[in-house]
Image 1 (cartoon, one colour):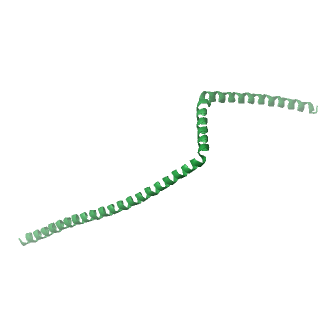
Image 2 (cartoon, helix red, strand yellow):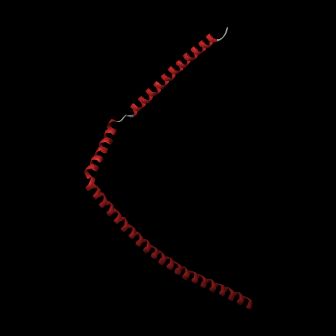
Image 3 (tube, one colour):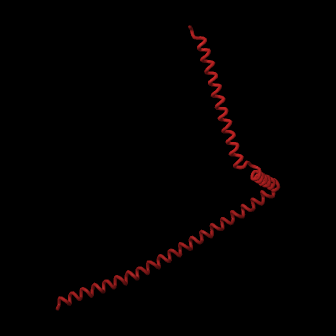
Length: 143
């Protein structure tokens, strides 16, 4: 019977140790979660502050750009508006009057045909030149 008591004591000790380990792990886990949550909150606050600072800088740059654009517009406003209008007019003219795809195809086919005709003419001229040279060579050869 004492053997069973020893085994029971060992089992009870293991159960207590296991329970204590689970309890310690749970408490430690809660502690770790709390620490992580605090660090995340601090990091979030720091990032929020940095983001706020960046937005302030961007707003300052925007204001400076707007002031600069206003200054340039006051100095050169009429010229810039005239150039902008001219560019718009050119874009509209190109849209309405530039060559269509069909016209470009016709033009490229005409160019191909002209190149073929020119190639044929050059071949004919080279052939005539070769015949003349052969004829002269034949005339100059000793008999």
